Length: 397
Ligand code: PLP
Image 1 (cartoon, rainbow, N blue to C red):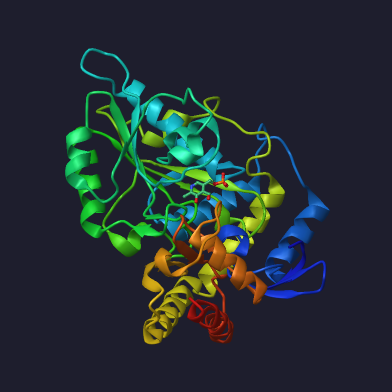
Image 2 (cartoon, rainbow, N blue to C red):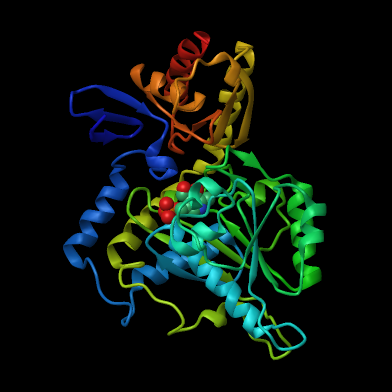
């Protein structure tokens, strides 16, 4: 399939076929394709200034960081802009290492270990791949960057037992997107926060897939355990609506008696990116985030989630085991025993391929789960149209 044009929830291929796009470039096109406000912002900025070095001030970066801090994170901190989610996570990993130097072990040796979780996905760079708790992502690329430990997700006892003198930080997704749409429990997130507090560790959230309204709140962790105050956060995907931008955020909270803010550990000269946060992508991202906020699209995500869950529940189809996730990051977990699967394919891929033949684009999440990631401004009519296709295809199994 070769997509050549998109508008809102629709995509057209080079043969003229149209699709309802509930894949959205894997949770990227949060306002659908070619949203007029985003297109206008890109056109306007492109006519003024595409790119300058970070050696100079970039007002669009400052404005975007202010939008993020004031309206989306709502905690004091600083933002560094990158080009992707993997790079944003590399930034968090570097911050964890800096923190481990700043607050070393009693004998003065730096702490460096970052705890992550099985089935997590943090990206494909050497750093973010090493952070990823899936051997299939790492196969053939060893030796991996050292300093990571992978633990079972939602298992607070295993986490408490794994903390050791080298541990510097815990990094996790509030909902594991690629790993099968697994949602952290409120108890687990609270335990993670308590363990971080007890052992002087950084609490770092990967909101690359979940952030900016997709899960029903600007930040997904607030849907699960709103009282959490993370030390670091990474984003990408939906924040740009289609332009390549990512970011990591560090809290301004003080980390020693001298009052050093955590965010100052990554000061000028400690990190960099030629393209990260250039005027063009920042102008586009600002338009995306303002539209999400002004139209209250996080609330729309929750309304649509309710509609999807109710409809699927009413079908009572034996091939559907359960629906997981929050807002418009939803996984339909399928019974593999009911899906004839040729060698080399997964049941999820078989179903996604069939859905595409019927004009609906979805994406697998792990071998047995299909993921619904419609744009946040999706309408009830589009949801109903997609669900009708899903019902037709799943009824065959
Ligand atoms: N973190 C999470 C949770 C993701 O889902 C992804 C991509 O799927 C990444 C990081 C990596 O982002 P990117 O592909 O932009 O590097």
